[in-house]
Image 1: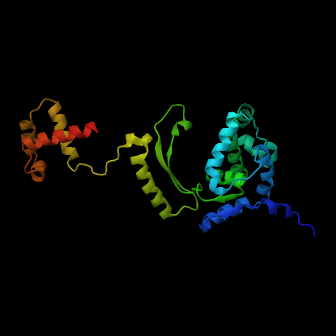
Image 2: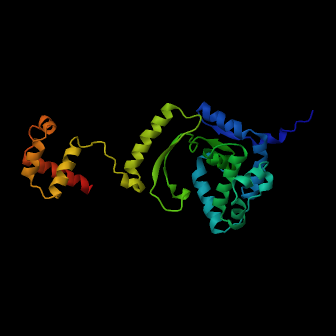
Image 3: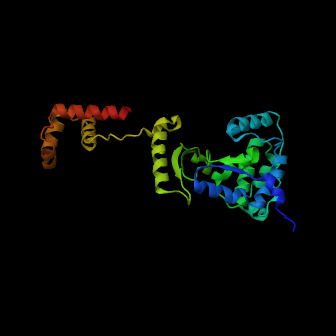
Length: 263
C-alpha cells in the first residue's frame, strides 16, 4: 500500500518545550500535512538553502534579514498556494497592493507568516514559531507567548499618533497564574521602559491628598495660611479628623502638594 505521506518525514519539525500545553499547540499545527507541504515552497521563496541551529535563531535571522535587505532582494507572496485565498483577499483588501509594492524581504516574510496563521486558523503569537520551523526545522517556546504583557503603539489603529500603553494579551490557554505573572511584568515595564516614562507609577499615594489640594487652591485664591487653617478647623469633620491643622501644618501640606506637582 502506497504511503502518500512518506515524503513528510524529512520535513518533520523538532519541538523543544517542557510545557505540555505549548507542545500540543505546536504539534497540532506543525504536523499538519498541509503545513509541511508549504515548507519547501516557502524555503524556495525566501532563499532558505541551509537550516541553522535553533540556538542561533536570533543572530542568524537578523543576519539573514539584513543581508537580503541590503541586497534589495525582491520577493513576492504567491497567494495561489493558500486554500483560503478568496477569504484572504476579502479580509485583507489592501493585500494585493502590498504584494505589488512591497519588496523588502523582512516585512514580506512577516506578512507571509501572518497569512499562514490565517490559513490555519491560528493566532498571531504563532508567527515566530513558524519562522523557526522555516529556518531551523525546530521550534521552542522562547517567543511563544499566548499570555503576554507588552508595550503597544495603538497609533497604528487610528489616524493620529498616540502614546504607547501596556496591554496584557490572553488566549484560550491562558491561566489565572499566567495573567498574574504577566501583570507583574507589566508593572515592571512601567518602571523600566523609557517609552512609558510618562506613567510615573505611584503606589505611595499621599493619605492627605484631598486636603492638601484643597489648601493649595485656597492659597492660590489669595488666602493666608492662618485663614486657611482657621476655616479648615471650623469645619466639624475637619476638626474631628485634624485636631492639629494649624497654619504651619497647612504650609507644609501646600508645599508637599507643590512638590508632587513637580514630579
